[in-house]
Amino acid sequence: MINIEMYRHEKEKIYFLLNAIMGGLIWCFSFMVTFTSYFAITALTFLFIPTLSAIWLFWIWGGLLFAVLLYFMGREFYKAQIFGNSVRVSESQYPELHKVVQEVAKELGIIEIPYVFVVNMEGGINAFALKFIGHSYVVLYASLVDLMLRRKAHKELRAIIAHEMAHHAAGHTSVLRNLLIEPALLLPIWGTLVGNAYRRGCELTADRVAMILCGDIEATTRALVSIAGGADSLANQTNVQVFMHQEMEIISFFAFINDVFSSHPRITKRVILLEAFGKTIGLPAKSALANQWVLYGVSGPLAGKAVELGMEPLAIGRDARMSNLIVPGDSGVISKRHCLLKFDSLKQGFVLEDCGSTNGTFLASGQRLTPGAPFPLKPGDRFYLAEPEIAFELRIR
Image (cartoon, rainbow, N blue to C red; front, side):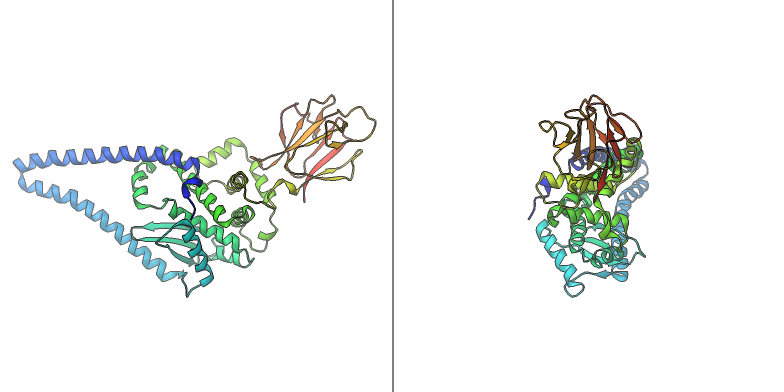
């Protein structure tokens, strides 16, 4: 059984605390105002209008009882809807899927296993976790299950189920926990800024737990990318590395605005963070790492040569004592250690850095790089050393 607290995302912890403090203050203020008003009005009406006192008492407690009644009616209506229009996973209904649910629940220490349903949402690809007092649910959209099973991507489906079950195990669906913070989430500005930040933190926690239970960085990240693409005919062909690189195309300001108004992090960002976290805890990774990248010589002494790139920086220059990719020839335009190509684990891509070369490192556009300032490259980007005749291109296999 895994310890959820070991993998709870830092942002979830911080923003839950802030929401709990704000929510608690609002609840305290509301109760104080309500009961102060109640006792004041009760005392006055008891002295002067006893009948009004009884009406006031009925109004306060009757309203509370009515709210509780509405909650339980809502629960039963939802149960009627989900049981009547979806297929529940059990020992005798989709037993292989049920086995995965049982295994995940055991590893998460969940005693009362949620009801798991497969529901037709007319092509929608999603899953969610939900809880009422007395009932917990995991709902899997049929198209999502098809997307995984048609490709025999059983690990990916396990990761999706583990993600939703993790929401229950981590308390994200707890009725009391959500009741505490709900007043804060309803505040217009606070709910957008702090409330959404908390929700995003919850998603990142569930991602981490799913990856631990799946035990495979590639399968977990590919599950997310498959949801983003949604085409089972293309999912196995999707290059996770290229997908992650899409994050670099987003202008930082608009990425921030997108975050503020979103309850879920962008999938590109989730994949990047997941892979980085997986490497810190030592999980194996395959296709989504830097070893898919190749530096190709376009022109000059290394034309036609393909150099596989890895996690170690690649120094390019003319002196074998200072560089590990040597540009041959007698030309003095290449410095002993001309430039450095290295993998940026945060951005999941390569950056190019000029090492203070005499004649400069240039992008294909002719822009000269500032020495010591890493510049991010995308697949297909070209650069040259000193002169356009010594050019290279960054590729993905």
